[in-house]
Image (cartoon, rainbow, N blue to C red; front, top):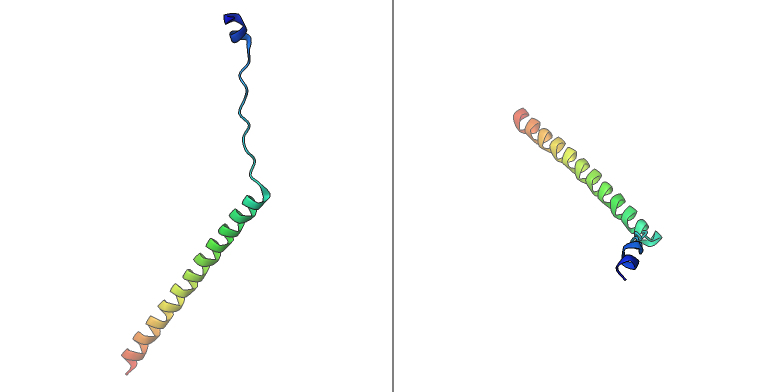
Length: 61
């Protein structure tokens, strides 16, 4: 009995492959995140411009 156990090979666990749906969802999430980051950067730039313009206006007056 003991020799039988020793010779018996262990089964390898199969890695679950990501389904297409999951991959698509992840891609969408990444795209959304990128878009959000881009928008915030744009807004920041706009805010800086507004602030500098305000300062210029105030200094000119």
